[in-house]
Image 1: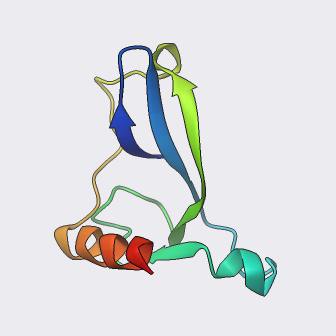
Image 2 (image 1 turned 90 degrees about the horizontal axis):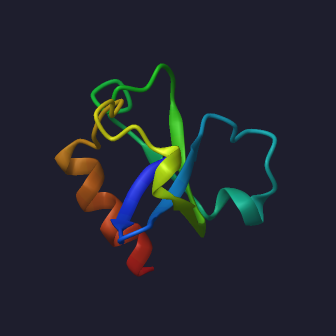
Length: 84
């Protein structure tokens, strides 16, 4: 997941997936491609599913063990993608 915001009890996230090819065009249109997925700590080409923000209880997170972080260029592109 990509953490979007953090509140007292919940963390808001977008899901990250490597599944893209078999999705409908409607679903694919909401998927943001992570160009620098290796720098983000991911094992293969991945996409951020911007179709739904998911709120998860903080208790499901081990904040001391993040996998990675989006590269600066991917962050900038994601912001532009979300504006559209």
